[in-house]
Image (tube, rainbow, N blue to C red; front, side, top):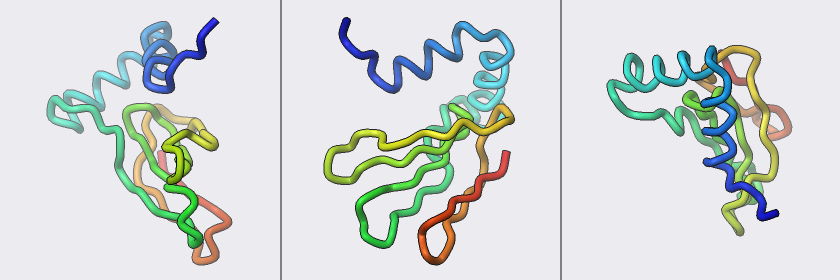
Length: 98
């Protein structure tokens, strides 16, 4: 079976969870004024190997490999919307509000 692409995987998770779907649509229509919020904050690691991105519409934070564009890791926040994010000065820790 072919692996599901990341966007399709996230949307499938949301569509099959009624509570997450309500929050996804609230982010889209209230906060995003009709648009999805796929990026709120974005930082690169010091070595430039990764982009760390908070994604409010998906309630997560991901690290994207700059060389390949693939997701290296994903952290889903406890709430229903990831918001602002910061990366520590040494690049070893990430904090995201929800």
